Each structure stands twice: as structure tokens, then as C-alpha cells.
Image 1 (cartoon, rainbow, N blue to C red):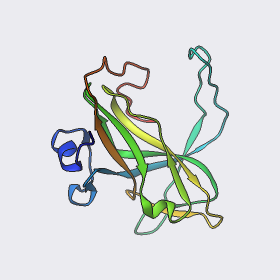
Image 2 (spheres, rainbow, N blue to C red; image 1 turned 120 degrees about the horizontal axis):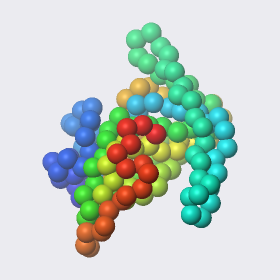
Image 3 (cartoon, rainbow, N blue to C red; image 1 turned 90 degrees about the vertical axis):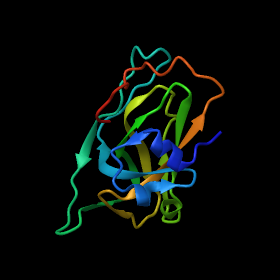
Image 4 (tube, rainbow, N blue to C red; image 1 turned 135 degrees about the horizontal axis):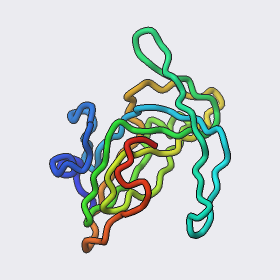
Length: 166
């Protein structure tokens, strides 16, 4: 069962929301941009995580005299959202791109947010548009949808639990 955005908000599944009136949607809650990062090295993935190493990244600075923005060229970026998530053991999260982004040639990809996870959330942003994308700080990029599980799980206990940054 998918939780309506107002219910997920009332339960405190997302915190640090910029503007509830703008971000709460019928089927989820919009996620807003905190920062954009560019990849600077290779990652390494294996079966049991003994060699796991995420790619290195660098924060891209926002520019602009009154409103802060960054112009992104074609390529792959990481985005960190302003909001923090808290999923109980019977709820999981899923991130979807907002339609205004895919209409501009932009994709958002993210993994499942496991039940029991608490911390920062982010996603991969891929600019397909050959003209790029100008994105402003706090722009609403994605929507978090919460699914209620048929029963509680043991909950997430991985290395990213409680993360304050990507």
C-alpha cells in the first residue's frame, strides 16, 4: 500500500522539508536540491563488499547574484537532497523523477530506501539534453513515495545508517 504524502509527512517519515504546502503531493513528498556533486574517480563493487569503494566526488558550487544555480552539461551527477528520511521497519521508500525533469531530458535514478534506514538521501542525476540543465538550489527534483510492507522487517543496518552526507 502506498502512503499518501500527507500521511507520510504527519508520521515524520521525511524531515527538514522546505515548504510542506509545495512539497506534499497526493502520493508522496517532493525532494529538494541541497547540492550537486560531480564524480572524480572510479568506484569498485564486489559481491561481499570487501572491495567496495564508492566513486570520489566533489561538490559543484552554486553561482548567481540573487538566486543560486548551477549549469549542468550532459553527463552524470550525484544530487543530495535537503530532506532527511526516517523509515520505520514496516515502510520502504522509492524515489521517482518529477515529470518536469524528464520533459527536459533529465533522468533521476536511485535505489530502494530500506525499511529502518535513517539519514540523508541522494540520487544519480543524468543530463541527456545536449543543451544541459540550469538547476537552482532547493529545486524540487524528485518525489519520495512510501510503501507499507505486509510485515515489519529487521530493518537496515548497513554502513550508511545515520549518514549526514552522501
